[in-house]
Length: 431
Image (tube, rainbow, N blue to C red):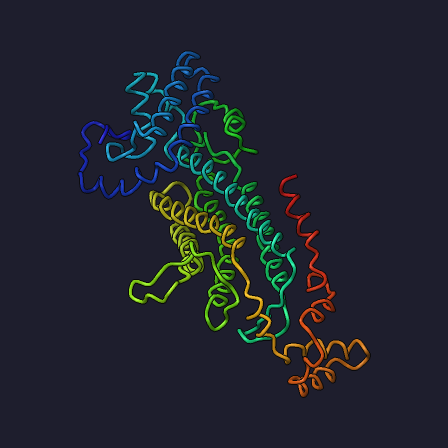
């Protein structure tokens, strides 16, 4: 391992202890490394503005930071066990190439605000991906909701309840993912705060140009209090996990529906072959493994959020416990986004089995229509309800699913989907 940033003369280190302290940190830092370099460039600009480094040193440092980023992307620089973490690697590289200029780069900052700002930039990037995925899913759902509606049983308590349609099913998830996209954007606006320059949580005796780094890094505002910058670590990450979790909750319920609809007992949906796998022993089987793992994926996101929350039983100020939040954050965010990325193509290509769905519409499923028609004609609803219940078996006489849906004019129902309103809400995200 390279020299430790915090090493002092006469202080011994133990290899086993150091291995425990480092954990997977240097490997996880690969995800945040380019953002750390970006923040370092803004930091050296700020140091030059207040005269801590010369203009030439600033240019040299920025040039070497760009070279390090290029080498990292190309694979010629590898962040590995030689370094305690990504921050140490950056300083070691700059010192190797530039000597004293590299040794000056850490002036006025701590690894605490370094990881805060690198993570914050990463979170903004991932929230943009989340919004994009949700918008794409919503657009596919709206496109399919606009197709000719096919009759589909509507269920409550997993029992056949009322006549529904494929258009209503898709419209429901469309609106859900429009909301998820808005939540991703609102969360992004909340976490869009620059912590760089707060150092270890108490500021430094330098007039750091934090307004410059805020603008240079594209943040909408400065996180002013150094103490709050530390308090926000974990809190902001949890908000991002909650935003992804919101989308994954809808994905889980959608996957649950498809898990049922693809069974032989329902036979409502056929999946593209790429989304199924074979059995290792049963030649006759095609399993909806992708759908099942989509259903399970919320657990990964929720567990990551929970682990971060449990780490936050801490006093104010930086505590080393927070190092463990990196792994939870990385795994939860990347898994959730990977799951959501699969949904648009799956939804676009799944096929409905109209015959099976139509055959599943039972006469009793029109009983609600009968009761409401009588209530509209003046019969007290509770009396109409009882009469319809007694004659439920004959409720479908002379009725069709299409007629039931056409009569459903309440906003959002079969003949009032208001897809144009949902399209407008989705379009506003692009405005």
